[in-house]
Image: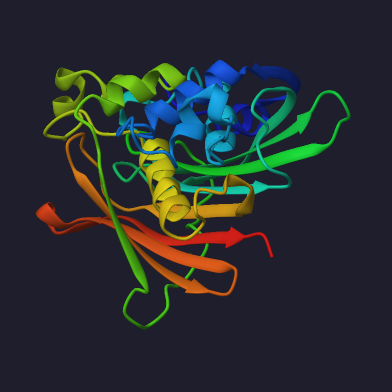
Length: 284
């Protein structure tokens, strides 16, 4: 199979029900590392219902995962996340009944052997009153699907980091089993779990889901700047630049300019920047 441009641009869904429970929100928080220290009183509200519950803001990006693309004709084992943007119109509730709209808004062909770039937008609103909740804008890199005949194009210019030393920094350990745990949130790509599939795709071992490392960066900002107040985060954007492996230590550098936090994440032991051009907008 191969990507078919017209069919790809016509794919999507409207008003698809998506319900999540308080238990789902608690599990998501555990899957992205909250509660790794069960005695951390500030993180307990995210993983213990009697203390909160608090909902990790980046859960909105996970709920908007475009499952209809799994059978679109691409080589799913070679698909990577390029960018993720999330706009929250109100804080994520502990549990909700949602309606989702999702569509492919662009598909750029880099050419044979160079892959394809797909941009997918998913919007979620509350079923009870039709109030808008979030807008998730995902850029996906189909590394094995260039040359399908679509238009050429490139990613938009990213957010620029300030030209000064970082104001703050936070180190977070990625647990060895974190990819296996996170996949139970809904992304079952074997690239993140099966060593044979990962090596065939050119990686030394299964890699962490991009949206998991994205949530770990959010955890770092909640911990370091927001005093764990999840209601402060209104936007969370990032560009993925290198894989994160379970067992890595993710170092998040932060620059705060009023209500905008610029950030990037590195794995110092491998001397690599894994998330860059990060932008987090806080409520004013």
